[in-house]
Image (cartoon, rainbow over all chains, first blue to last red):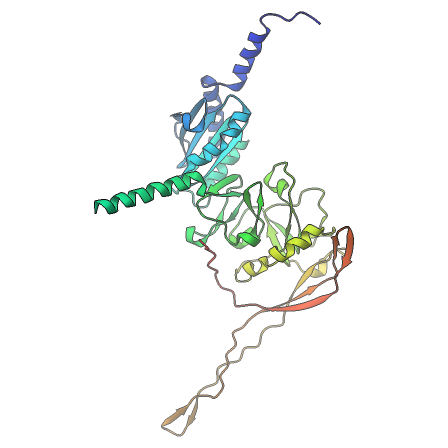
Length: 132
Length: 256
């Protein structure tokens, strides 16, 4: 077996940090991609600002509105963490129609708190664009 | 007054906690909205939650991993998206419809022509003929077991006026067996006779006045079917039954 480089663990950690996105530019880039998908679906997207990640047990969250429906996008260290936070996302919907969906290391929480989407068509478009 | 307001605030606080603690009802896929909440159809296909409960939950929904999945005819509730015609009972591969890998086969007990928003996934023995899918496979015991619970689903649709697929049983595949819905002859309407006048002063009502409202009747003939029970096949004897239908009217389906 070839001798392992002493820098190998550091290199692996660096690659993992880039892949998971963390709470810095990575999550912003992810959010930007989602925003682009929503805009491509002809949805009206507001600016997404930082949201307290604690209620979602996330590393970072950004929130805003999409065609009048509240959305929060959160990033996690792993897919398991994101999956585990799905119930927390549902709890944040409160007394509204909504959804909490996980994709990879990200969680999307949608809540129609202003009852602007009684037919669910907007939430359907939001979630479909998110899954793409 | 202050005590009353404090109590009211406490009740409101407890109610909001109850909502946050799981008073949501979970759905996956499109489904009818109770009339008390606006009626029509919810178009969200992903897993989602509402504060209202599913309507006619016993016959119109199956629970898939804890989420209610609507198995009825969405066109009856105003669905204008993609639709596919079916005739009679057939399996529903719920995992294929919702797009996950947790295998879950249910059965649709709607009689006659009806719609679903999804086409059958590959591998299911549904034959496309005359513009509709007909199930030509065997029904397992789970189908027979569920029949007592789910078969009354047709009662839900009887009062709803909507355009069903124009498919007749005459085009059924030879190896199809099931319930054929046949249109009945037009009903007889008896008009109310005028009151009988005896003399000038006295008005004597007619002794027997009977008014029948036009009621369409459906004749249902159950063909020979095969149900596998415990690994054996049982042939069903052919029989006919006639159902009187009430005149169509909007149903208040809000059971909240």
